[in-house]
Amino acid sequence: MVFFAEAYLSALLRYGVYDPEGRYVGRLDDVLANPHEKFPVVTRIAIKPKGDGKVFYVPWADIRSASQEGMRLAPGYASSTEFPEGEMQLRHEVMDRQIVDVSGQRVVRVHDLKLGAVGTHVLLTHADVGGRGMMRRLGWEHFTVGFLRMFHIHIGERLIAWEHVQSPTPGGELHVDHARDALKRMHPADLADIAEELSAPERAAFLGAMDEETAADAMQEMEPEALVATVGELSDEEASELIDEMDPDAGADLLADLPEERKEKLLSMMDSEEAADLRKLLSYPEDSAGGLMTTDQVSVPNGITVLKALDIVREEAQEVDPVYYVHVVDKDGRLLGMLSLRELIIAEPEAIVDDLMRREVATVQLHTHQEDIARLVARYNLLAVPVIDEDGRLHGIVTADDAIDAVIPTSFKKRIPKAFAR
Image (cartoon, rainbow, N blue to C red; front, side, top):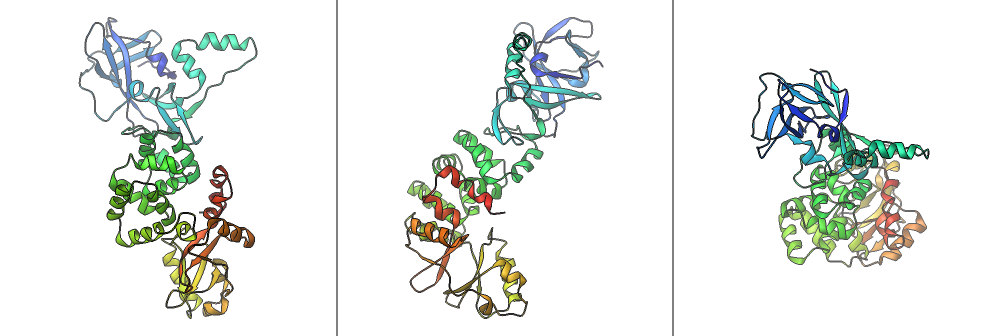
């Protein structure tokens, strides 16, 4: 076999295809590859015969040579007019598609694809998303590059290694597991920025490519309008599962923006305890402590040892992320005091939490306005503030980023979660 070391798909698509005796068979219509590899292996070519004949497929292993003179098929080559299910058509399914560049954390469009030979295999190695790739498609690359060089202007290639590619489009198979892992490692705010560049159906498919926890974290960073539009593209089951995975305050905010009928349908599909927490949050004005708070917080009963308190914190922390403070409450749920996680960890195991806790705690009432909460958070440099009722019972906490949402621009607010290590 004689193959190129590397080539672009746009160049290959200009090739003619010839039988073993050198007779013209047709033009190259597409190149197919296995989409589930880190670098997809080319499996076969699609040939459009001269005249009105039907496209047929030939295994890549049955190609004797591929060069600028065209492709020559090997003696006894196999062919079929049936489309090979599960394989990816590089021209029809990838070229001109929007993709997510996981490494660059942005949405781009594929202008061309780069292929490279490794032994007897040809791999899809890169997506070309730059202007040079577009010019190559149009056949203007050499002229334009040569002309610009006269003025000392250099046009570089913008290539994305295929392992960093993720498809946002509905129903697409354009993804690799490696890219999914990279999505999981990205900060939710960055995922939200990418999602907001897409249409609502694309956002829904993009979130669907993640595990539920990662998708829920990203949803919490999205603008309300984009989030509502995205949920409109999800099934009731998908939406209820993702909202259930979100922090209670963020889930309640989203439900409040949905039509009443859809909201009730989603609540009815959730775990009864989770649904009860969300209904409680929905009963308060959105700009009040009750509307802003999350019920995800860590509390321990008074009178117990530090060792016992740490056991409770370990168990509750599996559902609460992050843990800001540890609250001490009595048997009726009234807030008695508070400790930082550090204070609890360095204390003697047999010490009693009542002797360690701070009893003078800055708190807010359920109907305290958002701006008053923000002033309190700023004054005492708090990460979160407890929300209590008239009897002093603890209902939840308002985190700093939710508290100051009313007094800073949304674009800056999206950076705040990055200050809190996850």
